[in-house]
Length: 515
Image (tube, rainbow, N blue to C red; front, side, top):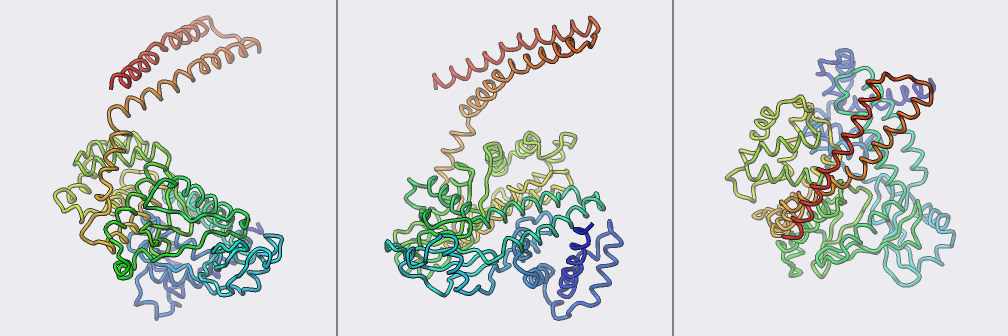
């Protein structure tokens, strides 16, 4: 009860700010919720008319900025969900600036000394009072360690954990109300969206997690000559402080400066595209906030990322789905695209494969025959996600995050060289990966892996069945003789069914040996 009362009061205050900015206008036209639509129309009468000239997404961005750090972060998270709020509003929210007034350097110093349990003079030879960046969760100061290493020190805002916990509880409460009172909205999974947002924010507020992400990315690219991740200083990193190597370089979108330095923009684009492909398909772990301010080019022409608070993960099954789906689109095999979606379980089995094939064709046909530099993979994915409602596709948050990251990546690519498609530059590597992981041999290996897994599980299944039967008998449960006979026959059938498993394994081994 107290939770509901507390959040209701806060909701009223937040709704008033949203209404003043005209951000509640979209709610006034929801036929499924007439009461909510009527309330939105009433409060809109009190809006500040100065915001009328802005697009809905711009009004929402302005309102979220006024509401504070948690709402700014949530707006940035919503920017990845064009399926929820539409392409235009998602674009407007993606420009939401995560910049706040910095907190005093005295507070930063105090936090450092408390977290590192030492006086600053023992840890740093110098510490710049003025932060180089101040965002909703933390701010960054440049410093030099006692050993003479130049570093960037990220420090959490004071009491930020409590503020976010309070706002996250409000967001979750609203999501629960939406799912309870408007069943039609459950397909969009508002509670799951907020839970995912909560997990992301909680990880961002433990700077050891961000440091670990940077360390993992660095390990993945240890042998890559064109992509370098700054080194984490673990001795000066805690839950509320992260110290990382200072990056000296030029912003990746500063084309004029890069050319003046003798850098080749197309080569930089090739390195960035190769690194992105490897992150997504080779490792399944990618930097999901790679806007131009988070990517630099050093003196050796290497791409150097910073800010590892938002990272994405894709399991092997999802990576294979992406590879097969994109191959189908680019070769015009729309039936394959449709079957991949059904096989992955993204489209319910009761839907028509033929109808979904037709929908995929409507997306892919305009691409065929166009110059490669005009084909946007990010736009292709966005169009695919827009047909989710018609075919009851469940939302895949990890794919939406990837699609939004691709939008940013393609934007950087057009800045570096508008005449080149960034996905064409690493094409030889992509083709090698496809042959290795999605070619005939790869599918044989995949079948062998499934066969081994099945072979390992079958004895356990049979043993479990026998144990259940024994328990039933010992417990005094009387089974009809025909039932007992049927169980025995089924167990025997399962034991006999081992031979196809071993045959599949033998075929797989022979195929690999005689390749």
